[in-house]
Every structure is written in C-alpha cells, then in structure tokens.
Length: 561
Image 1 (cartoon, helix red, strand yellow):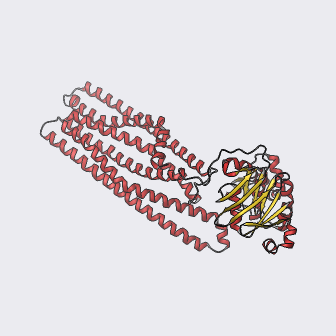
Image 2 (tube, helix red, strand yellow):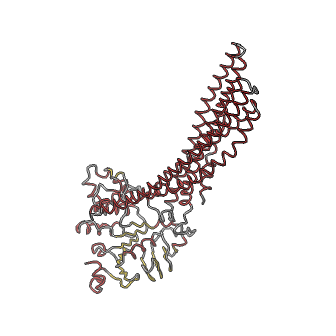
Image 3 (tube, one colour):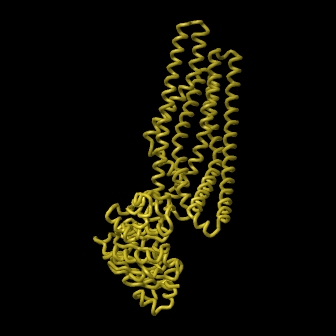
C-alpha cells in the first residue's frame, strides 16, 4: 500500500462530513469577499447621493451577510473537524488491527513505541488533511469570487487575479516539497526516539540492577539528538516555506493594489469601486495565507500517510491458510524434520500425545525461542512440518491456531488493571480463573495485596515482584483452557517451595490436555509424563526426568547446575 492510497482512503471514507464542510467554508469565503463589494455599493448608492433610506437598506444587507458568515464558519469547520477526527480514528484502528494481526509482520524492524507514534501522531496528521483541504477549497472559492468581483469593477484587475492564481499555486507546491521530505524524516526520528524511550523505561529495573543507567542515558541522548536535528531541519524547511509563501502573496497583493490605484487615479473606476478594489485586495491576503498553511499541512499529511502505509503494507511474517482443525481439538502435536533459525533447530522430530505433559530441555536458548515461535506459528520452519491433530500448521490461519494453541512466553507482560482482569483476559470464566490461580499459586499473591483480586496493577505489573508477576501470568495461561498450552520457564523467579506447589498444580489443572513445558526446572520436569532433551537442535534423548538425570551427563548439567 502506498501513501497516496492511504490519503485517498482517509478522504473518501469521510466524504459525507467533509463535502458539506467544504461547501459551507466556500460559502463563508465568498461572503467574506462580498463584504467590500457591499461597502463599495453603499458608498456609491447611499453615502455619495445622501440617500438615508438606501443607507439603512444596505446596512441591513451587510448585517445579513455577517449573519450568514457566522453560521457558515461555525458549521463548516464543525463538519471538517468531525471528518478529521473520524478519519484519524479509522486510521488508528487500521494500524492497530494490522499490528495485532495474528500473521504478524507489522512489528518487524520497529520498536513498540514507534508503532504507537505512527498510530497516534501520524494518524492525526493524516486526519487533519480534511481541515486543510476544507480550508484550501474555501480559500480557492474566495480567490475566484474575489476575482470575479474585481472583473465587475475592472476587467484588468479581475484578469490579474484570476490569471495569477494558478502560477501562485504551482510555486506553493514547489515550496512544499522540501517540507514534505523533512517532515517525513522528523516523524521517523521522533517515532524512533519514542520507541527507544519506551524500551528503556520498560527495562528500567533491569538497567538499575546491572548498573547500566549511564549507558542507557547515553543511548537515549544520541537518539534524542538525532530527533532534535531532524526537527530543526523540518522547522527550517517550515520557515522557508512560510517565508516564501508570505513573500509571494505580498508581491501579488501589492501588484493588485498598485493596478487598482492607477485605475482610480485615471478615473476609470469610482470612489466606491476603489474602496471595493482595495478591500478585495486586502481580503485576498487571507485566502492566500490559508492556501499557504493548507499546502504545508498537506505536505506533512503526505509524509505521515507514507509512514502509515509502510505499516499497513508490511508483508505478514506467515501466510494465512484455509485449513480447518478437527473438532474437538485432541492436542496431538508433531514436528517432522524441522529446521530453522540458522541451525537453532536441525531436522527436529518431536511428538506430544493428546493430554500429555511433555517437558523439553535444550542447551541453546535460541532453540527454545524458535520452538515456541513455531508452535504458536509466529514463524514457519525453513524445512519440515509442524502439525496439530494431523493438520499442518502452515495450512491454517494463525487466528485458528491461536484458539487451539496458547504460547505463554517467559517474559509475558501483565496489563494495567485488576489482578483478576489480567487472569480472565483470555477466559472470562470466574470459576476457571479461581482454579487457575490456585494451580499457579497466584491466590497467595492476591491474599497479600490490599484489595485481593480487585487490586489494580501498575503498567506491566511493575507493582508486583518478579515471582508474583510470573504466577499471575501463569494463572492467565492456565485460565485460557487451551487444548494445547506451551509454557516457557514459568517459574524462574519463584522459590523452591512455591515451585513445587506450582508443578503439582500445573499437572492437575492440565489433566487431559496437552501441555509442553520448555524449561530447566527439576520440579516441573519431575511431574512431566515424558522429557525430551534437545542438543545441537535435535532430540538426543528422552525419558523420565529421573532416568535422564541418571544416564545423561549433558542433561544433568543443563538442569542441575
């Protein structure tokens, strides 16, 4: 998708609000141009001959013009603002929908804060194009009406205005090109700075723990300086644009006033017509200034539209599919000859029977990461197949997989809100949530909080300790009741006693449903029906935890040391 398509979509989608606004705004500018015309007529038809009746009549006419001006101004920009906000809202939804698309891909090469910046700042700029277009159309209407009025006063004056507008607009477009380029760079740098800031804040506790605050500050300082430099360049381009437009419009108005003055001096126009010509010349400064502003806004809107288009048009990380899982899902997981991750997994053969609690131990963290990505289908293998109940995951839509397979990663975040709301985020069943909290020992966490399960957690659960967050995240995963649950190191931050309780609770809670635990915890592996040991990206041994500890030194080293 290109930036132009995004811009057109935003405009067309809200035409029912934007068109009435543009019509009313055009009427407003025409009314503004009518004011000096009426004043000129008052001078020639009422004041010069001393006709009091005509004077009252034309004053009443002038009052009516101002009443129409007030109405048209208020309601034109009400429509334009509505179109602007609705377009920005629709774009935010599209960016969010694409970011959350189960196929992924939108987040590739972008920090979370950068995506937020695109969904907010850039969407607002594109939506604001409705305001600039409404104002621009109104300004053009004012220029045309003013030119026609000047034609009535004097053909040379009218032709000067009507023929001078097109080249003026062409020059305005050329002046806006550098602003468009530098505005795009400014938004790109600002979004990256926001992403880095969000990334640093999210890891603030870790940074303090390892004493890396200075390094983090230096990193953000460099990013912020790049953003500042881009902003300064954009501001400089804005200044050149505004200054150039002011010079062009000033020269244009001066020429109109000069020609009108010479015509009056030669007696070709009356005093009232001279007042009308001068008033129209002064009036023309307003629509020309509006055009200058609208041109700058359109340039920035085009730059933001291109950034939104880069997200909406990002290729998905995995393709969709039209395959269907059998109902009910039994939970038979099978990997055959799977290779991926530059050797992280090499010809991996792995099976998990329906209802089995399978432990997976690997000496390579990268292998664990890729295994989780494949089972959740956030990536497809370079070679081999991953199947669920005999159906290759590559033939299924990722959304279909998410309903059957839940992957709970080690660093899963909690959300700002109540503890119980976090646990029921994927379930919505209070009974299931209660059992899941007991199995994950999260009931102890709730018992130690001031308002129990109603306690509101801070962003990402930072008001809890690491072990408490892990227990709540595990409870959330268990409450989902998924046919297949994949857990990655769910107890690394809890004490040994709690870990043993969680291991027993996990086995009981997942009875009859497939569970794959990728971990090195002896407590969790001890309750598994079977454990497989991955070394060098392939399965090198399998059996019970006790058997592998006894006969496999490499396994023993991985889980006990």
